[in-house]
Length: 227
Image (cartoon, rainbow, N blue to C red; front, side):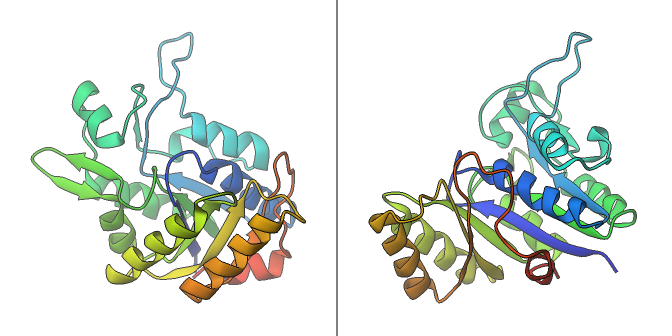
């Protein structure tokens, strides 16, 4: 049976894609048949032929070395660098939950471990037209537990605790926290880790340093986070 996890973040640009790429790399290097998925991707560049390149998916594929085709990684790809709900309104082709679910289930049929990355933070709107779709709706529909990626620096206590409390209020299971841009020995960042664990009662499962090429966790412990 396929094992799955969702990667969300405390906001945009905290490094979800970077961390996800390292997670997939760790699994791939240990012989795990692993795959990536994302419901909607905005802010993408066009290829010379005119088609859009799913940038986050390409990064994960390049870093991890997984053989999964890019066309299978994300059903909705937009050029405009705004939230998916607005990008789809500008460009057309609004996100449909049933299509996201269909693509996810297709990936799950072919791979042992599937890592799904969210867009922005947990409150990211995915579609806001005739239909109203939020990131949390996607997570609930797919029945996924989450890991939260957060910047290790100043302000993270507030953003981490608020994200966790919101997810708990919405009955979205959280397995733990990943600190990105972490500097070992930095007194503030070490304290941020302790305070986040204290206030959320969740473990910081990994601390990822800038420029790291490896996810700092034993593969067995990483695999155990997947449901």
